[in-house]
Image 1 (spheres, rainbow, N blue to C red):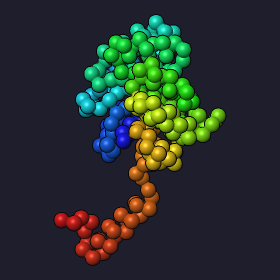
Image 2 (cartoon, helix red, strand yellow):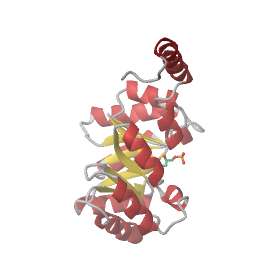
Image 3 (spheres, helix red, strand yellow):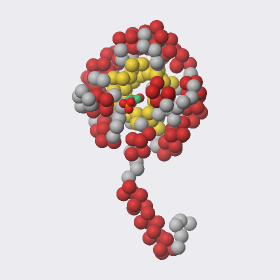
Amino acid sequence: MKLIIDTANVKEIKRLCEILNVWGVTTNPTIISKENKPFEEVISDIDKVLEKDQVLFVQVVSTDYESIVKEGRYIATLRKNIVAKIPVTADGLKAIKTLHKEGIKILATAINNATQGFVAALNGAEYLAPYVNRMTNYTDGVEETIILQQMLDAHDLDTEIIAASLKNTGQVKELIRNGIESVTLPVDIADLMYLNPATDTAVEAFTNSWYKAYNKKTLI
Ligand code: G3P
């Protein structure tokens, strides 16, 4: 099981990497543009806070086949452990085939139904990002992601699902308990994976009991 963080904010990446077992970081053009810095600077800053074995996902911006391929190749040069994200369109699928043959790792993204994910896997994508919450406008996003996993399993495809567009921990729990290998979490949902006011209340009560008995708030 892999926990991934869906942000380009270096401060948040650093903070969450200290708290959680973060396998990697996903970005997209919207996420990167929120940082108000040049693209190369955003990538270089993220690279500085990630360990070498943590994976970074960077998405192409162009929408035509030739330019997607060009951008995919460029992304592959930015860092050793990097995956190019390509949306599943007709041009995107063509580009996935080409880049896969060149040995460039691809995450097929903006997947809004199981068949899109399946054809991207057949084209050689290593990872698939179904947009779970966005899908709920049309269908049950969690269920559709589980169907995609079943389709991959039925044909022995080892393409890995990284469930994306998650808006609550309920969605995350359902995906994890149904065996989905990876989830990429926005910062607020990543925090909600471990924060709980009842735990804070319990810790406060322990501290108060200790203080009353020993007049200090530490063990040693
Ligand atoms: O990588 C972004 C993807 O997870 C989509 O998320 O929140 O824009 O639906 P959202």
